[in-house]
Image (cartoon, rainbow, N blue to C red):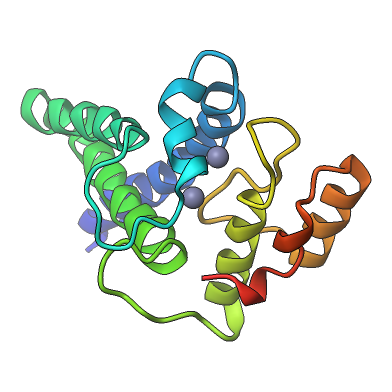
Length: 169
Ligand SMILES: [Zn+2]
Ligand SMILES: [Zn+2]
């Protein structure tokens, strides 16, 4: 009866771990001198509606290759880690690429609830010019928008026209 419990726990734990990993990679590598070269493309043209590949997508590809290697070369519990990584990939694609940046024909701007909060938090991530002084590096975890705005004001990095994320996108 509990045969599915352990795989389910591994998948959920992997999704949580991937969010921590993505947060750390985004904050300290992608926004650092080492990783900005790939990530910059995404900050310069975050809304590519309908257009193709951007250099920043290489990060997603790196994670996909790791998951694919796990699928191919492992069985037992690491295989379920690969399932969790893949689930995280789809959650990221849906929240970040579809919902916030509307890269695919997806024209829904959430008006309330959790999705609204994710939308606003990531819009505020993009409300800064350059790689320094940004906020909200997670993709599933979204801090309160009013706190993020305050952080940006305190840091003095908020672009004036970006102060109201409701009016974007
Ligand atoms: Zn970023
Ligand atoms: Zn983004």
